[in-house]
Image 1 (tube, rainbow, N blue to C red):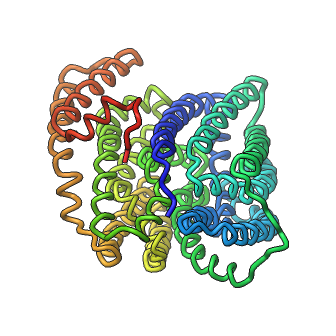
Image 2: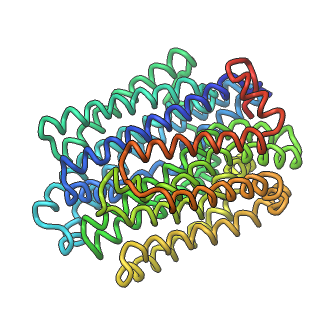
Image 3: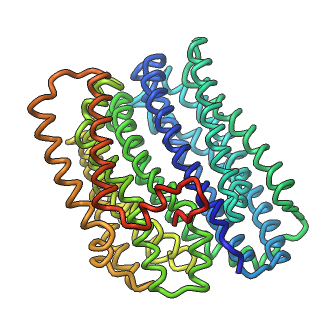
Length: 507
């Protein structure tokens, strides 16, 4: 068994949170900047086109997660030759996928007139088709290129992967600001994304080749191994489909039933809702190698205790974001992008509420993947999301944006109930024990704090401005930290917080 590099995990988590913080700040700053320079309609067009083409990302077929799982598996049994055969087979498969992306992309391209002719103007449709063509090229290169990052994650080189993401985000943002100042449009943004992706794929390839010393021998294509890979990755692929439909289908449906402004408002709400998830996934996304090792060498009791511990750490972050968005989110959206996007607060808040428990149980998904037990979960999730799409399509006719939002939220809630039942069958997960140990105490204390702040905010807060908003956020952050530190953290967590610069375990 390979030893988990606790430094890589510790600094990987710290860099993940740094990356998230920078990404959120850049996103919050760039979004109104982009809207101002493009206009509400063209921003909605940019969002719609990205959502439309993003379905081609599904042609990854779950292979990135497969790479992480299999690399971790081969490392755990010290099978270097098996790893070499696996990686050679997977890279050859990605080259085939790249060809498939181009073919599927052209099918989408030539059907756009029929899908959006009623909701888009001729000019908007022309621009959208140019962006789709560019994004097809982008995906045909970046999906295979993502395998190099997956290899790094399988080797637990989290410092490199998270560090690269930080640099990439900053570099992309600088280019976007520059091109928009020079008068660029939404097509220019797609060109920037393509160039940036190409540069950082090259960086990842050089790191894998030189620092990890991975060699790819394309002559060692193994059909038997490929069958085993696809048996595993197919269900990852199905889960990826559900995620894609879950977060992107609303934009497509509203693009067909409403207009680009509605798409933009819904897109902002979904963006804020999914930002919420990135904070939990800063830890969750690092844990597939750990889950793979635990499945081999640990008991179900150990897995459950680890899940509770991770959820406890994540809850401090998620409950802070949820409570602060509930208290001050409407004010923030008004100051950030204007009153036309006010519905985005309701969209984001609903998504955050129903997604909290699934995010806190994210380690359970890693355990299912490590055990190869994701088939039932994938089938159920796909069934629910197809129902969500049908309901959302009809509800959006009558209720518009909120009809689509409530359909997605209902699907998330139903899927959570099934997932908890399935966890209990696969690794003796106890839902009520999980809630009692990981969530009950934080919910009680933070609910009291939120109630008090709501009363104070209602009585005294009249002025809406950035200085007043930032002051309220700062005061709330201070009060929240005091409650978490004094009443919620255990002795071990406090010790870690005091010695965060030393060699301590974060999980």
